[in-house]
Length: 435
Image (cartoon, rainbow, N blue to C red):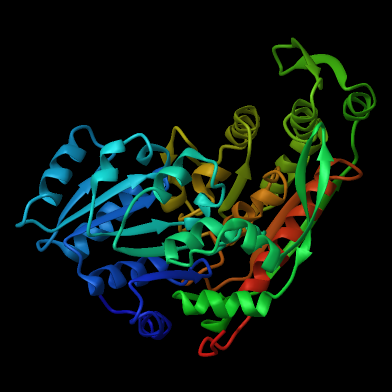
């Protein structure tokens, strides 16, 4: 495997660490750095945990680069885990198992693994330590750990704590908060909760992370990628949206079949959900604006969306325009049109495709709707990198269809804030200082 100079440099920086975190910006080849580090460590048993959509990619990569020395198992396949564990407990075979985050915690037998290397692709997915996946992974006992992420904090430093435990920094959560997070306790509907005000001692945090094998790099430190240009298409909220915001209720017709529906915002969550949908799939002006945008170019377009009904309506528009269609979501991963048709439209649902896809044949992304809130800033940041990565030689354009004076403008401001907080961790820092 031929590595780029920045990848060789990364391996040199972590050569003395059997627990490390490669927090490199999207497109810098964390997969190659991580797999080479795993090879250097040389454990007989290795477990890779990744997103479901990337299991096949990891399987192909590890098989191509480790075969025939290792047996590579896709642990999402029926019966594979039995064979993997049998090999792991033998003295003969070298094994690599690959499994996704949503399945791993259901495989309790993996807790019996010992003397193994654990690699987490997109380690930011364990930032919620109350999630089943996080609790399970933190209960494992690997001898070696490799964390890979382009957005390790998902916009908030307090979410680093779970990853710190895997790196061997056994600081308790309360001490971590007191040392690096400014917060206050607030009464939240009858119980006390922390409200984050900001962060402190960030330089010290960076040095400590370096001590425990964390390395950082942004794309612009390595290569000169093309310019990124944001284009905003602003729309006015319609009467339905205003009525719902005022009354938290609306009765209306849905679709060409004129199906009657009622939207009832009886909780904060349902209110936010329906406001988002009224700014998206139910907003005729936005659907028309999307159609106009598609008609304005014959170039490949990548379209990010949230809801199934959004997809249905957008696909119908594109079908009427006779453009080839690809779809990537939780049920479908079809990129044939994207690969073969230079005027194709590829619809990508955030959770299924914001991470890992290489879409640099396109240089236009349309955000029909955005992912929700500060906790989704990593999804948004990673979605932008699907086209802005090594191999891209054209200016990248991002088109935002945003409803003015609505939940969308508030949501966009939160995403911007979260991205800026994440960026601060990537600021160039001397790693040879001691704390």
